[in-house]
Image 1 (cartoon, rainbow, N blue to C red):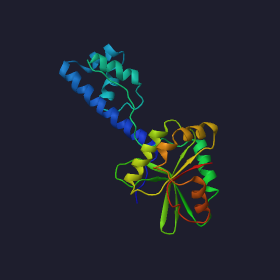
Image 2 (tube, rainbow, N blue to C red):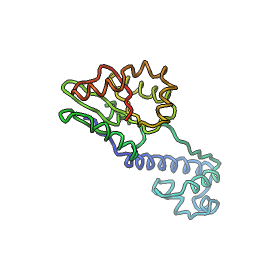
Image 3 (cartoon, rainbow, N blue to C red):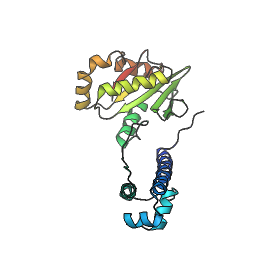
Image 4 (cartoon, rainbow, N blue to C red):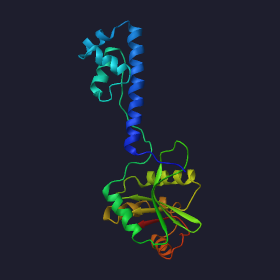
Length: 217
Protein backbone atom coordinates (compact mmCIF):
# COMPACT_ATOMS: atom_id res chain seq x y z
CA UNK A 1 0.00 0.00 0.00
CA UNK A 2 1.35 3.45 -0.93
CA UNK A 3 1.51 5.83 2.01
CA UNK A 4 1.18 9.57 1.55
CA UNK A 5 3.69 11.85 3.22
CA UNK A 6 2.18 14.75 5.15
CA UNK A 7 2.58 18.03 3.25
CA UNK A 8 4.30 19.76 6.18
CA UNK A 9 6.80 16.89 6.54
CA UNK A 10 7.46 16.95 2.81
CA UNK A 11 8.12 20.68 2.89
CA UNK A 12 10.56 20.37 5.77
CA UNK A 13 12.40 17.49 4.13
CA UNK A 14 12.78 19.36 0.86
CA UNK A 15 13.96 22.47 2.73
CA UNK A 16 16.67 20.49 4.52
CA UNK A 17 17.82 18.98 1.24
CA UNK A 18 17.92 22.38 -0.49
CA UNK A 19 19.86 24.01 2.36
CA UNK A 20 22.39 21.19 2.38
CA UNK A 21 22.89 21.54 -1.38
CA UNK A 22 23.28 25.32 -1.16
CA UNK A 23 25.77 24.92 1.69
CA UNK A 24 27.90 22.57 -0.39
CA UNK A 25 27.89 24.98 -3.32
CA UNK A 26 28.84 27.90 -1.03
CA UNK A 27 31.78 25.95 0.35
CA UNK A 28 33.02 24.97 -3.10
CA UNK A 29 32.75 28.58 -4.34
CA UNK A 30 34.50 29.93 -1.23
CA UNK A 31 37.41 27.51 -1.55
CA UNK A 32 37.71 28.21 -5.27
CA UNK A 33 37.92 31.92 -4.48
CA UNK A 34 40.54 31.34 -1.79
CA UNK A 35 38.39 32.91 0.93
CA UNK A 36 38.07 31.91 4.57
CA UNK A 37 34.76 31.56 6.40
CA UNK A 38 35.76 34.59 8.49
CA UNK A 39 36.25 36.71 5.35
CA UNK A 40 32.92 35.64 3.88
CA UNK A 41 31.17 36.26 7.19
CA UNK A 42 32.67 39.74 7.52
CA UNK A 43 31.59 40.65 3.98
CA UNK A 44 28.08 39.27 4.53
CA UNK A 45 27.66 40.78 7.99
CA UNK A 46 27.42 37.48 9.89
CA UNK A 47 29.78 35.44 12.05
CA UNK A 48 32.19 32.90 10.62
CA UNK A 49 30.46 30.31 12.82
CA UNK A 50 27.18 31.02 11.02
CA UNK A 51 28.95 30.64 7.66
CA UNK A 52 30.20 27.25 8.85
CA UNK A 53 26.72 26.12 9.89
CA UNK A 54 25.27 27.22 6.55
CA UNK A 55 27.95 25.34 4.62
CA UNK A 56 27.19 22.21 6.65
CA UNK A 57 23.44 22.55 6.13
CA UNK A 58 22.93 23.07 9.87
CA UNK A 59 21.17 26.44 9.79
CA UNK A 60 17.53 25.47 9.20
CA UNK A 61 16.16 28.93 10.05
CA UNK A 62 18.62 31.03 8.08
CA UNK A 63 16.83 33.92 6.31
CA UNK A 64 16.77 33.75 2.53
CA UNK A 65 18.24 37.25 2.34
CA UNK A 66 21.32 36.00 4.22
CA UNK A 67 21.78 33.19 1.72
CA UNK A 68 21.36 35.64 -1.17
CA UNK A 69 23.98 38.00 0.33
CA UNK A 70 26.49 35.16 0.82
CA UNK A 71 25.86 34.04 -2.75
CA UNK A 72 26.57 37.58 -4.01
CA UNK A 73 29.78 37.74 -1.95
CA UNK A 74 30.89 34.49 -3.60
CA UNK A 75 29.92 35.63 -7.09
CA UNK A 76 26.86 33.40 -7.24
CA UNK A 77 23.23 34.04 -8.03
CA UNK A 78 20.62 32.39 -5.82
CA UNK A 79 17.23 32.55 -7.55
CA UNK A 80 14.04 31.68 -5.68
CA UNK A 81 11.39 30.01 -7.84
CA UNK A 82 8.44 27.71 -7.41
CA UNK A 83 7.47 24.72 -9.54
CA UNK A 84 4.28 22.70 -9.71
CA UNK A 85 4.75 19.61 -7.58
CA UNK A 86 1.61 17.72 -6.65
CA UNK A 87 -1.71 19.02 -5.46
CA UNK A 88 -2.07 21.84 -2.93
CA UNK A 89 -3.43 21.19 0.53
CA UNK A 90 -7.19 21.48 0.72
CA UNK A 91 -8.77 24.46 2.44
CA UNK A 92 -11.85 24.54 4.67
CA UNK A 93 -14.15 25.36 1.75
CA UNK A 94 -12.91 22.35 -0.19
CA UNK A 95 -13.37 20.10 2.83
CA UNK A 96 -16.94 21.38 3.17
CA UNK A 97 -17.60 20.77 -0.52
CA UNK A 98 -16.45 17.17 -0.22
CA UNK A 99 -18.60 16.77 2.89
CA UNK A 100 -21.67 17.79 0.86
CA UNK A 101 -20.87 15.05 -1.62
CA UNK A 102 -20.35 12.46 1.10
CA UNK A 103 -23.75 13.29 2.55
CA UNK A 104 -25.32 12.11 -0.71
CA UNK A 105 -23.52 8.76 -0.79
CA UNK A 106 -25.30 5.65 0.58
CA UNK A 107 -23.77 4.24 3.76
CA UNK A 108 -22.71 0.98 2.14
CA UNK A 109 -20.36 2.81 -0.22
CA UNK A 110 -16.88 3.57 1.10
CA UNK A 111 -15.08 6.89 1.20
CA UNK A 112 -11.34 7.55 1.34
CA UNK A 113 -9.63 10.95 1.52
CA UNK A 114 -6.34 12.03 -0.06
CA UNK A 115 -5.88 8.91 -2.18
CA UNK A 116 -2.46 8.75 -3.92
CA UNK A 117 -2.21 7.66 -7.53
CA UNK A 118 0.02 4.77 -6.53
CA UNK A 119 3.03 5.66 -8.68
CA UNK A 120 6.34 5.54 -6.87
CA UNK A 121 7.59 9.08 -6.18
CA UNK A 122 4.39 10.70 -7.50
CA UNK A 123 2.94 13.12 -4.94
CA UNK A 124 -0.35 13.67 -6.75
CA UNK A 125 -3.53 12.41 -5.15
CA UNK A 126 -7.26 12.44 -5.65
CA UNK A 127 -9.12 14.52 -3.09
CA UNK A 128 -11.28 11.51 -2.36
CA UNK A 129 -12.43 8.15 -3.63
CA UNK A 130 -15.83 6.48 -3.50
CA UNK A 131 -15.81 2.70 -3.55
CA UNK A 132 -18.41 0.01 -4.21
CA UNK A 133 -18.38 -3.69 -4.96
CA UNK A 134 -15.75 -4.10 -7.68
CA UNK A 135 -15.45 -0.42 -8.55
CA UNK A 136 -13.81 2.82 -7.45
CA UNK A 137 -14.57 6.42 -8.34
CA UNK A 138 -11.79 8.99 -7.79
CA UNK A 139 -13.04 12.45 -6.83
CA UNK A 140 -11.49 15.91 -7.15
CA UNK A 141 -13.05 19.08 -5.75
CA UNK A 142 -12.80 22.72 -6.85
CA UNK A 143 -14.30 25.61 -4.87
CA UNK A 144 -13.45 28.31 -7.44
CA UNK A 145 -12.66 27.62 -11.07
CA UNK A 146 -9.92 29.61 -12.76
CA UNK A 147 -8.25 28.03 -15.80
CA UNK A 148 -10.76 25.32 -16.69
CA UNK A 149 -8.74 24.06 -19.64
CA UNK A 150 -5.68 23.58 -17.42
CA UNK A 151 -7.86 21.84 -14.86
CA UNK A 152 -9.12 19.44 -17.52
CA UNK A 153 -5.56 18.71 -18.65
CA UNK A 154 -4.43 17.94 -15.10
CA UNK A 155 -7.40 15.66 -14.59
CA UNK A 156 -6.67 13.87 -17.87
CA UNK A 157 -3.05 13.26 -16.85
CA UNK A 158 -4.10 11.95 -13.44
CA UNK A 159 -6.61 9.62 -15.08
CA UNK A 160 -4.01 8.37 -17.53
CA UNK A 161 -1.46 7.71 -14.78
CA UNK A 162 -4.07 6.00 -12.59
CA UNK A 163 -5.29 3.50 -15.16
CA UNK A 164 -7.92 5.75 -16.78
CA UNK A 165 -10.73 5.38 -14.23
CA UNK A 166 -14.09 7.10 -14.33
CA UNK A 167 -13.76 10.26 -12.22
CA UNK A 168 -16.01 12.77 -10.56
CA UNK A 169 -15.18 16.49 -10.46
CA UNK A 170 -17.16 18.23 -7.74
CA UNK A 171 -17.48 22.01 -8.16
CA UNK A 172 -18.98 24.51 -5.74
CA UNK A 173 -22.31 25.73 -7.08
CA UNK A 174 -21.64 29.47 -7.49
CA UNK A 175 -22.51 31.97 -10.21
CA UNK A 176 -18.82 32.33 -11.12
CA UNK A 177 -18.29 28.58 -11.46
CA UNK A 178 -21.45 28.10 -13.50
CA UNK A 179 -20.30 30.80 -15.91
CA UNK A 180 -16.83 29.26 -16.20
CA UNK A 181 -18.31 25.85 -16.95
CA UNK A 182 -20.63 27.29 -19.61
CA UNK A 183 -17.72 29.02 -21.34
CA UNK A 184 -15.62 25.86 -21.31
CA UNK A 185 -18.42 23.39 -22.07
CA UNK A 186 -16.98 22.37 -25.44
CA UNK A 187 -13.54 21.70 -23.95
CA UNK A 188 -14.96 19.66 -21.08
CA UNK A 189 -17.48 17.57 -23.00
CA UNK A 190 -15.03 14.85 -24.04
CA UNK A 191 -13.43 14.50 -20.61
CA UNK A 192 -16.71 14.65 -18.64
CA UNK A 193 -19.45 13.33 -20.95
CA UNK A 194 -21.98 12.28 -18.29
CA UNK A 195 -24.45 14.76 -16.79
CA UNK A 196 -23.82 15.49 -13.14
CA UNK A 197 -27.41 14.69 -12.18
CA UNK A 198 -27.10 11.27 -13.83
CA UNK A 199 -23.87 10.55 -11.97
CA UNK A 200 -25.46 11.50 -8.63
CA UNK A 201 -28.49 9.34 -9.39
CA UNK A 202 -26.24 6.33 -10.00
CA UNK A 203 -24.35 6.95 -6.77
CA UNK A 204 -27.64 7.31 -4.91
CA UNK A 205 -28.49 3.79 -6.09
CA UNK A 206 -25.10 2.54 -4.95
CA UNK A 207 -23.83 2.14 -8.50
CA UNK A 208 -20.79 3.48 -10.31
CA UNK A 209 -21.60 6.23 -12.84
CA UNK A 210 -21.29 5.11 -16.46
CA UNK A 211 -18.89 7.94 -17.27
CA UNK A 212 -16.90 10.81 -15.81
CA UNK A 213 -18.98 13.79 -14.75
CA UNK A 214 -18.90 17.27 -13.25
CA UNK A 215 -21.22 17.76 -10.30
CA UNK A 216 -22.25 21.16 -8.95
CA UNK A 217 -22.92 21.15 -5.20
